[in-house]
Image (cartoon, rainbow, N blue to C red):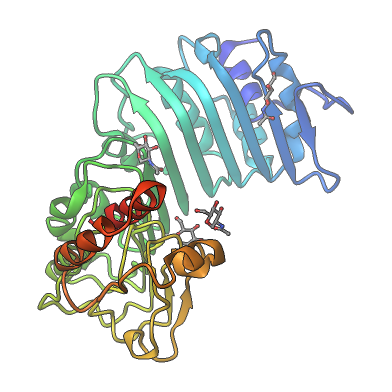
Length: 380
Ligand SMILES: *[C@@H]1O[C@H](CO)[C@@H](O)[C@H](O)[C@H]1NC(C)=O
Ligand SMILES: *[C@@H]1O[C@H](CO)[C@@H](O)[C@H](O)[C@H]1NC(C)=O
Ligand SMILES: *[C@@H]1O[C@H](CO)[C@@H](O)[C@H](O)[C@H]1NC(C)=O
Ligand SMILES: *[C@@H]1O[C@H](CO)[C@@H](O)[C@H](O)[C@H]1NC(C)=O
């Protein structure tokens, strides 16, 4: 068998191989739609992937193996292979945990252009032997609607999207570029995806507010409805608001959970009037921030440090608010706070309330003082 056929076998299965009824490495669900292969064992039987031949959705766990053996020297897709690839039902493919040489990734992308693939996810991959050969004029498009690149590192090249982007068509709807070490919203490479409606840039801690403020391409992405910036070192809600204002974006849902947002003083800023959902979960907030977007319908404030149940007029009317995981909602914590703690006044900055708490802690001694001090530190 030629190496490229083994590549297809690995990733897509060739016609020649009949699927066996059971396999130690792959499982296919009853409908024959979803197939999962786990090749983590030291000596995996790659051919077992033939079981996935009928599947619509395939997930392959590479167990950090080097896929170099699937590389073909002179790569060409024969007409027989094209027929085979066209016949596959495959729509969604996830490839996880593997070392893949750049030339193999190129052959892989090329083979995929003959399939009906709509959603591709590459996760925890190390791409060796750079550079990734650019798409050549004779290569077909890869008309994906969703691309997910999560913790993929491309040796020697920092911009993976620039390398993969040219294969895609403007029709891409959802793009996840997570855990890639991005320091910016990659505007030059996003500009072509005018139909993008979902953009996730989570787990790129170098982005920060400055990266957001510079992301002027967000304005051009007129279809963008969801912007996810989890764990991107955002620190000030005021600056996030100003950043969005600067970009002129019309997003409807913004997820900035898992950022350590310091309570913000009131800033002169207008949230995008289109914004209807704001996720501020796991954000270390001690107060309900304001101003909030005016047309907000959903606000997730779960797992923050709210010690008081927000009062009615702190929240926009007709907004669904999620408050679980806050200290006030935990009976054991709120019982401890009862009577001992001066309630935090959310109208003043948190700096003011810290000095208000300290003298109180000094009045008690021993374990109680320690416990209280710990509580007070929570305010600082
Ligand atoms: C994959 O297989 C390995 C053993 O080879 C096992 O330890 C691991 O839990 C499996 N992973 C999944 C997601 O099934
Ligand atoms: C934030 O992103 C970094 C880098 O991708 C990752 O190491 C870290 O675990 C993430 N933190 C959370 C809370 O997900
Ligand atoms: C908000 O974000 C958190 C953490 O990322 C997530 O668990 C939660 O489901 C999100 N909330 C909504 C309403 O989507
Ligand atoms: C309530 O707080 C206690 C003490 O901090 C903690 O152990 C417990 O897990 C919390 N319960 C919930 C439901 O968060």
